[in-house]
Length: 184
Image (cartoon, rainbow, N blue to C red; front, side):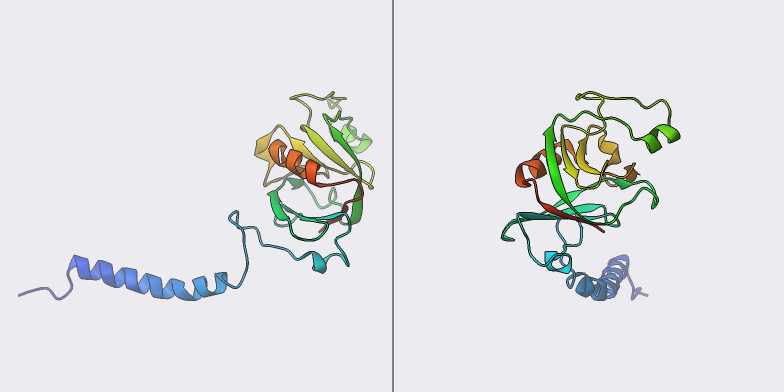
């Protein structure tokens, strides 16, 4: 007697069933626009009335930084590190007030209270600010690079937004002083 359900037929039936179950999920996924890194795209109009000189939205939940140029024709997304705790996370509107290649680093008083071994670091491979820094109008809050690539995509900073050195170099060249920034 011949078996009605062969291995080949069972496999085909399983694949067809799996594809049918996945179809609703695929249809829903198409309604959300995402880039290749699977970050959800943002619309600057949800955060600002105009683009100004340039615009940055740093999303601490998705750990992504969104950049738009002055006329909205250039939109880029960068993966970031974000503050370790809610206590260290500042949210709101600010702007870039200063830029520096090869920044030096001095720990803040609250950092020293948490870790007395911290000390001033000149520019170089051990400096936690990486190769470039964008200083915000909030004291001690920056968007900067990092030599420790393990930090990107994680809650690992003392309040700043960190990027891979190659990406902060790119963002540094795109953002003039006066770029508006929102941390959400």
